Every structure is written in structure tokens, then in C-alpha cells.
Image 1 (tube, rainbow, N blue to C red):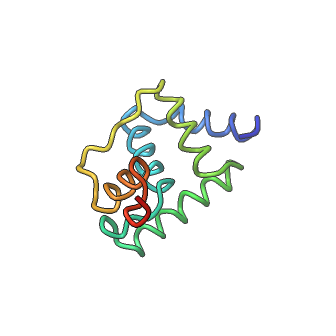
Image 2: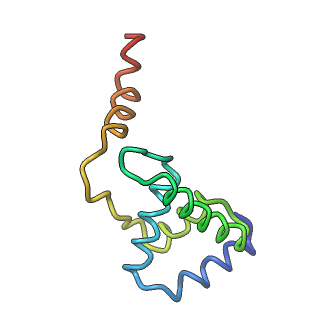
Length: 104
């Protein structure tokens, strides 16, 4: 993220409570992780993503940059997902650790 975007994001985040920043981080983390159709309404997810992308364009940064800036503002105390992994998330974790079942 460039210096101008960093200053704008920092100014914006300074006006938000810790709980608001944690909520934003959770949403951005979910958005950056990709669409999990088993957990979201596709239209609602895409609309939320568009809203955050517009914010990123206003600040001059990407969604992962915005997520990382929020995480930095929390001092690394980022919230862990408070839910069980979805079937898609479980499959992704299994494939990344053990490889694809068709190629074992």
C-alpha cells in the first residue's frame, strides 16, 4: 500500500472502535478467502465484496491491503472465526495438508 493510501486508511481506522475494526477484519478476511457457497448467499456476498472494493478504490489499495491495515491497527490481535469450518473450508484444509485425494 502506498503512503497516501496508508495515511487515509489510518485516519479512517482511528475513528473506529476496536469492536468495529474486529468486525471489519472478519468480513474482509472472509472476502479475501473467496466465496464459500455453502455459507453465503452469492448475491449478498458479491454485493458486500463490491462495497469493500469501492472502499479500497477510494483509499487506493486492494482488499488484502485493507484487511492487513485493519489487522495492524488491532496490534495483531485479530479475531479467529467463531464458527466451525464449512465443508468447503475443511476440504481446502485437507487438500492443502494431504494433497488431492485423486493424486495420493
